[in-house]
Length: 446
Ligand code: PLP
Image 1 (cartoon, helix red, strand yellow):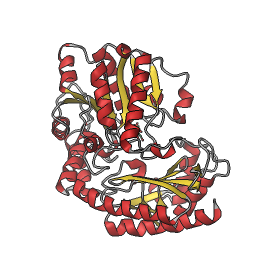
Image 2 (image 1 turned 135 degrees about the vertical axis):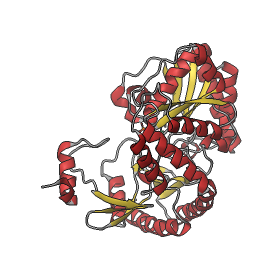
Image 3 (image 1 turned 45 degrees about the vertical axis):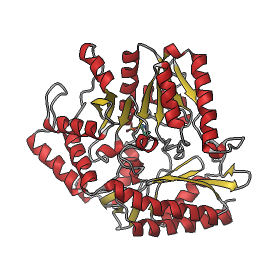
Image 4 (image 1 turned 30 degrees about the vertical axis):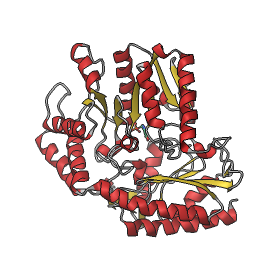
C-alpha cells in the first residue's frame, strides 16, 4: 500500500511501532494522527477538528498554514537548500540583522543553532570563554532543554537522568510567591528577599568563579512564574556588581508571547546574552540562536569562537525566520496579543473566582497557567510534586480532549498558550470548555 493511502489509524500504529515518543512510557500511547492544520485548528483523518491551545509546544505562534512562511521556504528551496556556515547566505544575513534590530542597543551579533537546547549549550560555552570563569547559576523551576548541558541547566526533574551533573552548575530558587511558605507583604518585599538570597549564594560560591546566571525570563513550562516587581533589575545589578553575565532564555517567552517581542522588555533590563528558538520560525523549520552583546561579539573578533554546527543558520530555517518575523510586524502581532491577552486574563480571574479547584492563575500576554489545588486555603496541590498516582492530570487532559481543547499539563498546572493569532471570540469559546472541565474537577477530583 502506498504511504499516501494511509488511514489515520495506520499512521498512528506505524509511528508507535517504529518511533520513540519523548517524555513518555511507550506503552499505551495514543497520539492523534494529524492530517491537516489551519490557523489555531488541526484535523485528524476522521475529520475531527481540534483547537491548539498550547500552540503545540508554545512554538507555533502563527498557527498552522501561514502562507508567507510557506512561500518563503519554497522560494529558498528553489534557490538552494543548504550552504555551510562559512558561506554568506542572504536569508541568514537578513535574519541576523533583523534580530539585532529588534534587540536592545547593547546587543551585537547572533550565532544560529537548530533549536533551544543547543542555543543554551552554546550560550554557556560563550559565557565561559568570554569570562574565563566556569560556574553557571540557573534555577530549580526551569526547563532549558534536554541535551547534556542544557539538561543540566534545567532545574526540574527532567534533569535527573543526566546526573551526576556538570561540575560548577549551581541551582537557586525562582520567585514563586504563590507557594512561598511565609507570605510576602508586597512584590517589592519578595524581590528584596530573593535578591538578597541570591547575592548570599553568589558570595558563598565565590563570585570570581561565576560566569553567568541563566534564567528563563519568565519561567514557562514550570508554571508561568512571572518575576515580581524589581526582581530582574535586581538580578541585573547583582550581575554588574560581580562581573557575571545575565543570560535570558527566551526560547518559550520570546517572539511576542508576552505582548512584547522579548519577555525581558517587560522588566526594563538589558541581558548580556539572549537565547531563542521556537517562535522565530514557529517550527515551520527548526531554528534557534544565541544573541550576544556588542562587547562579547567584539571579544570574538580576536579570540576563537569555539562553537560550530553543521546546520548553523540553515538557509531554509533562516528564510522561514525572515518571513515569520516580518509577518509579526505586518500584522502587528504585539498589539493583538495585548488585546486578546487582556480577555484571557479577565476570563482566567473569573475561573479562579468560580472554581474551588483553581488555586492560582498566572498570565501575561498569551502565556498563562492554571494551578489546580485540592483546597484553596491550604493551597494543597491537586497532585503532589513529582507524582500523580491516580493519573489525575491525565484524566483532566482527557476531559479537555473530549471537547477538542488540546494543551498539556505540568505537575498540577494546565498551560494555556494558544497561537498568538487567536481571536477574542475564539479564546472565549475555548475557555468555555475549560470552565466546563474545571466544574467536573470541582465535583469529582477534589
Ligand atoms: N528553553 C526553554 C525555556 C524551553 O521552553 C525549551 C523547550 O521547551 C527549551 C529551552 C529547549 O528547546 P528545544 O526543545 O528547542 O531544544
